[in-house]
Image (cartoon, rainbow, N blue to C red; front, side, top):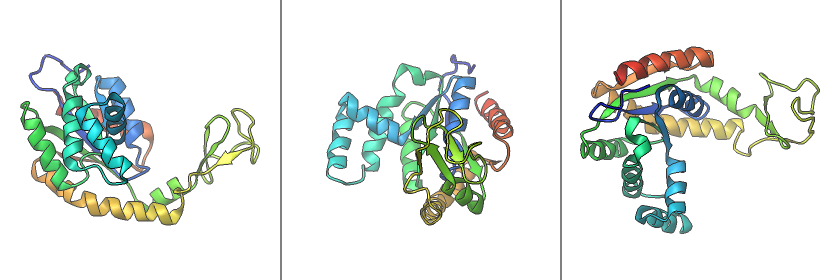
Amino acid sequence: MLDTKTTTAPVLILLGPPGAGKGTQARMLEDRFGLVQLSTGDLLRAAVAAGTEAGKAAKAVMEAGDLVSDEIVIAILRDRLADADCASGVILDGFPRTTVQAEALDALLAESGQKINAAISLDVEDAAMVTRISGRYTCGGCGEGYHDMFKQPAVQGACDKCGGTEMKRRADDNAETVASRLEAYHAQTAPLIAYYDGKGALQRIDAMGDIDAIAGDLRAIVASATA
């Protein structure tokens, strides 16, 4: 477990495109190091549900069909970081997405004497990501996951787990949409890679291999960054 006696809680960032495994790896790091995963979507939903001032502002913007501003996201993150469960450290997943957001995050953390301990980039090959994501589908009954190439049910069209025959595929899990999402990710993230590299906080991991091997590389980085 992390040493909670340190004066500042460690802050880690996971960078990576859709399908790189950020969510899976973040949950494993939570369990291993006592960190709290904070994703932008979850933060917004929780703030709206709690009815905080920032949450009310976010709700009004979303109901109008607009994008929530960086200022509102930072205000929500400020509130969340003050919660007791974040005292052991956090993993940010999905924020920041731009250098403007990264600079705002640095300013927020500086208020409490904190900084980014490590920005970890999960590096993957675009072509492999298109194949990985566009081939996914799930059982409509139990949610068991399958893949056109990597994990097909033993009996075609029937779920191994529950026997259900209704399979579902996300509308945006197609090659064209995935390629577009990857292009947008690289356009936004390339400056972030340079930003954190310039601060000496960037770490890169080859995320094309085995999940356990990737987890081992991540654990070593986190252990060193939070020592």
